Structures are given as C-alpha cells and as structure tokens.
Length: 118
Ligand code: 5GP
Ligand code: ZN
Image 1 (cartoon, protein in one colour):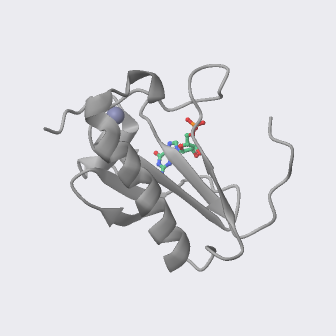
Image 2: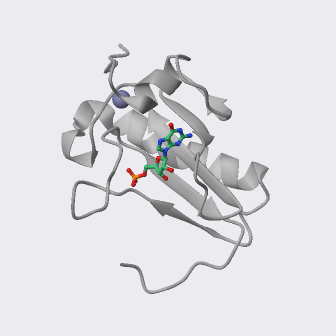
C-alpha cells in the first residue's frame, strides 16, 4: 500500500505532482536528482510509502530498506562512480540535520569526500 502525505514534497514528487528528474522507480523506491547537488553526483533515494525517518521503520519495511541500498549500488554503477567510490547518507531528525521529513538516502559522489564526518 502506498500512503502519501499531501504536504510532503517527496510524496508529491513520487505522485508526479511536483517535478523531479527521476532516474529509477519500482514498487518500493523512487530515485531522483537532488535539486541542490553538493557533488557531481547527488541522487536521492526515497521509499514510495511516506515514512518520516529511520525512526519510523518497522520489520515490514525491511524489504524497502534493503532495496534502497541495492538501487543505490545500481545507480552508482550506472553513473560510473562505483569504482571511484561514493557516500550514502541518511540524515535523521534535528541533530542529524534532516530537513525533509520523508526518509531518504543521499547518494553522493564524483569527487573526493572530506573526512572526518560531522
Ligand atoms: P536532508 O537535509 O533532509 O537530509 O536533505 C534534503 C534534501 O532534499 C536536500 O539535499 C535538498 O536539496 C533536497 N530537496 C529539497 N527539496 C527538494 C525538491 O523539491 N526537489 C528535489 N529534487 N530535491 C529537494
Ligand atoms: Zn512523504
């Protein structure tokens, strides 16, 4: 079942009500270009079902959560950064720096990431 929040920008993108450059879509997840990329590759992967953050994930979400990773791997490969490397980021809640309250994975690459995190 796909539940949507009418006020959520990512739900509106998934529903086709707001524009986005979509790279991938299946029954679990949608991937689209971040509107403000911080690196040459910056893709967002989101569950089709509205889930505010990892804090709301349950056992029933495990297939979707796994799919986020395998789709990220496939997109990294398709965009030619699998070998050079990339970073997957899931910001969660206020201290995690989450701005959009719909669970999402950032796939960032195409340049050398700075380290350490935080
Ligand atoms: P967060 O800080 O919540 O982890 O990241 C939210 C991300 O969503 C940011 O990188 C921001 O650029 C992106 N974003 C916010 N609004 C939109 C939008 O309307 N369309 C797209 N494609 N990305 C968005
Ligand atoms: Zn949503």
